[in-house]
Image 1 (tube, one colour):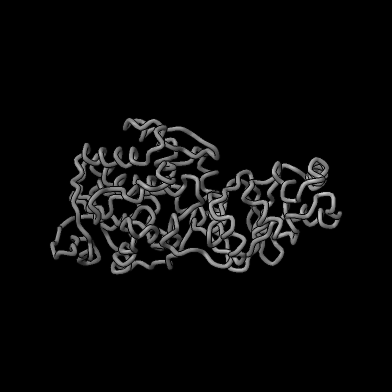
Image 2: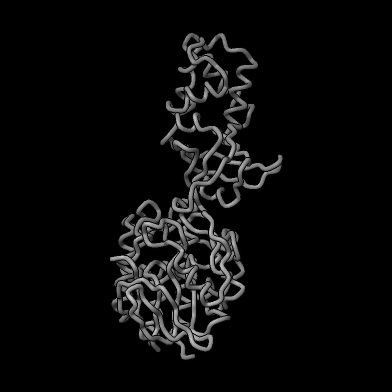
Length: 406
């Protein structure tokens, strides 16, 4: 069985290795000079391989088309992913939020393990950009490369990703290949992406400041549509960080982001804390009274937000002014303006419509011998290792199916 896998990313390398291991003659085509370029920069170079949770909990973290993944996650679970990489000599560890990373904290170890597995199972690696999937009577017969070379094959798997991080080769080429074979593509859009806010001057003054143990509530028309607790960071354009990236899956222009800077304290407890600090620093300038409560970089912008003079003496602060401080500590509000571009997104939402893909095999229902896996499909999830697991699980299923005779 001659098989071509297009794209040597996370899903493509998994797919190719599994297909070859099960007897297929596999050619893995990659447009870049090396495999796994995007995989090598995930998780800030650490690679959040998967999430150590149950299947049901996993599916709760899938934003689009979770039911489509039942078979894939059953065939290749999060536990299977851990076992797979550890069997390849990459020990893993579990961190906060059940996130799984290499013990080495090096994404390159995951890339090397996958590439090594491909070579060991007999996958042929070749540089090449596929511009056309050749079909005859609604069945795959080969692929054409950008240099005009035609490669005959029995089956093809499109595994060339979405449109996030285009410098790594994900430029949406897979969508064009799928559409040419009759598949509908749900319009690609950024997911897990930083957001710009209306409060540009405030956020710009805090650029680079990370806040940990912060509570976030996203509100639309007075109704809470998202809530989370964790880490975020201010940027020159707005906000980013794990909590914001997850919230980006629901964020829309005009939504309010309510930040609780002291979620461990009730308003009453926080007010007592303020009174205690104000008494401690009563003869100091107001700015000095927050040294024990806020990061130094946040103090002046925060007081400006409250409309207070940082040089005012602490003992002169009125009860109403203290209430303003309390309100902003518990409910610092930003307004969403727009997401950053898809080029800055961690993953792409949208993609090949899954209603025309068999969830048990990742096979096309429209073209015999055509398969899909990974980010090219209209399936995406929150941050935390879920998207890479989707890549591995769908790649595994597609690999098994590619090795089967028609």
